[in-house]
Length: 403
Image 1 (tube, rainbow, N blue to C red):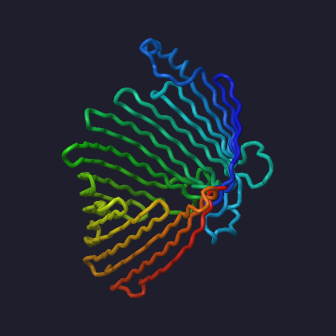
Image 2 (image 1 turned 90 degrees about the vertical axis):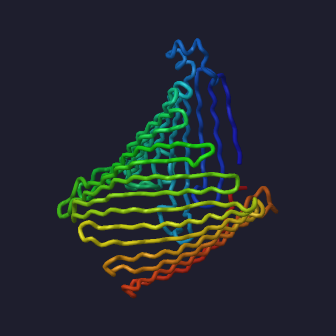
Image 3 (image 1 turned 45 degrees about the horizontal axis):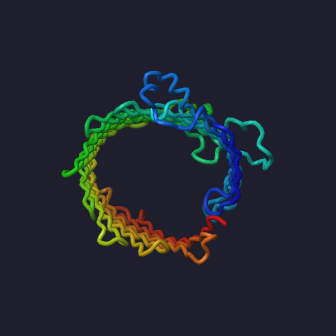
């Protein structure tokens, strides 16, 4: 790894080239530019009387250009062309008033030409991300937006925007958020677009000597738009109420949660379902090298249109053992049932997985990790034997993170 930098008063220009091997990024080159009026400092009483002057004095702007070359995360995907392409990222961040308003933007596009970057690519290859956050007294707020074209490397043809606000009164925190998501970003008339909206209100009441209380209400809806000819419109929604009590001690934690949900669909078929679920989760650390995480839950669904009731209890346990920084073993197992009152559903599912990781310290300048992962899953359906499935897999991974 090599790096260089050039500094002048209040302006810093640097470039860094690094070579990484493993899953994800193979090579990255960064060019960073930072500018501002003066080094960050706390706002004085005199500055607070002149907010505009304080904003000018605390202005900060940082920009970065990154070139990333991606490789396949799994050997079976090495042949895919999408995993052998370069992306060009242009990032900028700005701080107007420390703590009051900060914003960041990112523009990225896919480039497979292997030539020096020119222009910004086509809209189908672009990804645009913007965000802003700040705080004023006991109130915090923020917004985020991301849109990626249909040919972009990650989360293609999806757009998300999120607006949230948080207000703290004594020890109680109120949080409200609105989130929209949709596909078919380019507005292709031949592709159906699904628009999803989620509105959520959360109340969190922490307690020092008593269990913490969390309450939330969520309203979510999905509707189709730009429906091509011959495609049936879709419209559905859900109202969910969650309540949870959690307690944390020195060596263990416990959480009791309950959820009520009412889901409905108007198109393509009319249906309504009421669901109630209860869950108990916990974590116990008998020693500094081991942790146990048990879970137990039960869910009951009742379809109003048919009157059919389905019960689904599930239990699980996960274990982690790490005797030292170089060795880690994790294992998990679950067992679940699902039975319906009409006898059409009677399934059992069992799954188990484990991962063994070893990071030898023989070559400190060449960090290397070995891991062996195995998984087993089996599902049986007494109502229909043809639906039984079994799956057994094993994966050996060798990762070299740098040199």
